[in-house]
Length: 250
Image 1: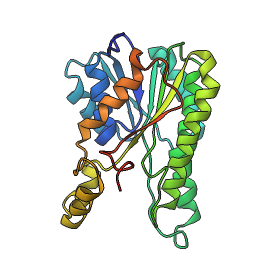
Image 2: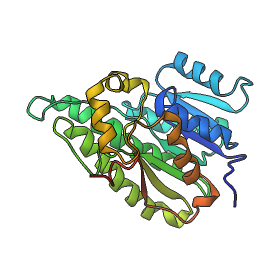
Image 3: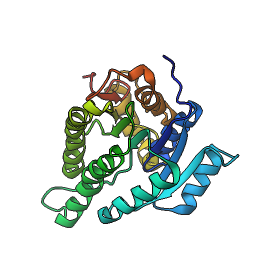
C-alpha cells in the first residue's frame, strides 16, 4: 500500500483558503483530482488556479452550506457531471463566540446547522454514490473534547461532529466506507492573524503545547492525506488530534 491517491476524486468543503486550502493542496500533491467548495466563486477560482495552473485536476463547486434544501439537487448535478466522490472532507464551518446569556438563538441555530447538520446531510447524500473504499473525513476541533467560556455553541457542534463521526463509521462501514475525523489545534491561519500577533497568547501557547508553537497551516494536510489513503484502510470511527500536543500536555 502507498500514500497515493491517483485517480481518486476528492471534495473539500471550505477550501478556498486556510486549512481547507492546505488539505486540498495535500490531496492534489498525492495525485487526487480535487473539487474545491466555497461560497465565493472568485476566491474559489483563485484557489484553483494556485493549486492547478493547468486547470485539469482542480474543480470548483459553489454552494451555501446554510441552504440545506439546495444540497440534494447540487449533489446530483455534481455526481452527474464528475462521477462519484471517493473522498469527502467536511472542513467548512462557522463560529459564533459569546456568553450563553448573550448569544442570540438564531446564531446558535445557524452555527449548529452549518457545523453539524450540513456535514451530516452532505455525507449521506454523497455516500449514496460513494464506492467501496470511500473516505469521509470530518474536521472537528480540540474544542470538541474540551471547552472554554464564551464558545459553547461551537464546542457543542464540534463535539457533536466527533460523535457523528463514530455513528457514520458504524453505519457506512458495511458499505466499505471509512469515516474518521481530524481535530486541529491552534494554527497560524489568516483568520487567526490577530491572535498570532498577540505576545501574551504566543507566550501562553508556547507553554501550553508540547511543541511550544503554533501549527503551520500546511501541517494539517498529512493527517488528511493519510486517512484518505489505502494506508488507513482499517481505521474508522477515530478522531486524530493535530494539535502540537495540546490535548496531551498540562
